Image (cartoon, rainbow, N blue to C red; front, side):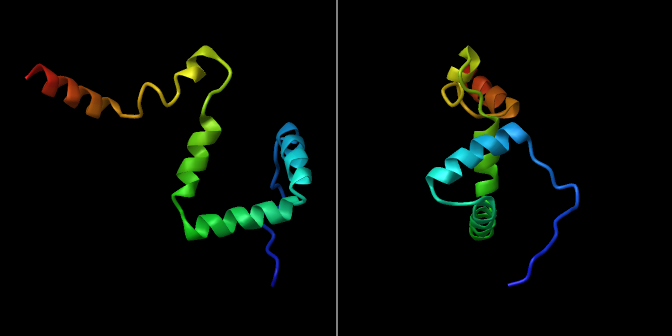
Length: 88
């Protein structure tokens, strides 16, 4: 199996790496294994990217974060359409 250099300036946030490093130590994994598993999962199921992006942007710990997933996940056009249907 060959290797591929992604970029010479492939950088991560240091605090994020430290937090992930602690989790990986508990699971006896390293960063290379983690990224390999991630890429394998994405190849098998590309929808995971959307799920991971949504989860990473989800707010937690603040009042508005409590409402994530409770209010709903529809866009403005769908909301307007359902409101107009309700009025009819």
